[in-house]
Image (cartoon, rainbow, N blue to C red):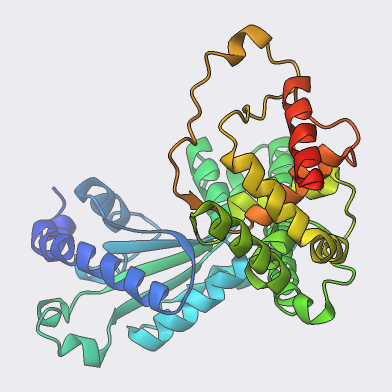
Length: 366
């Protein structure tokens, strides 16, 4: 072994002990700031890798103590702007070696291919070093790499292909690398813009009930907000649950997704349209729901194409349930319209449609 690597175990052992604590600390810091991330992972440089780096002809290391990346932590975020949010936390919570830290993103020349990341060389900050659980790690230097998940994908594939710089790559392959890098950059930014749009969309929906849902098109997020905020629907939900003696669960996005498809199939264009129909027919919808749920002869909602011979063998998995999902009023609005004949080409078997119609006629005559 090279003399330069003679102290490997002496340096590596405390870093191995520190790595899990540092990982855990970074996760807690990011979670406390509300920053979402893909993962936080650490590694201690292997002996072989250490010797290889120390003996590079292009470097003038005097010994293992010159290496600032013996302990490395990689933080992978979902979006590129989260890289900067993570960086703020790192700079605030740790003592940064600015001379050896690099924002490699700033070095990305227009004619270069590749995806680069933000690198910090750091130590524990003074306040944390004074805590008993971290005192033994006061002298540990480590490197933190921060990149988005698409930047990470680029780096991993690039590494797997065996190229660490563009100089050794054939010209045609280099051009193809550049095209892929450009696509990834566009994709990174587009995902970020989509996220920002959805955040703004959700903020608009939170205030949509004050506009009486006017102009609010029917999508999963809109229906989810409608289920949570619309008084008329919540009253219908309570009427149905009280009539059948069941409690209501919390609203879920999954349930909202199923209901938005039915609302569209029922011909509603906006949630204002749905609200107006609920206001007009709430009493009838609640009576219909009670009759449908309470009737022991009620068949399953058989889809079109079901073999009649299979119907008698069905054990209802919902039998015995004592709770109803919030938003149940939207489901029975849909069934009510199917029963009335308001839905063109409903997706149910004729046996189910016949029973829906009978249930509707029953509440109308009562």
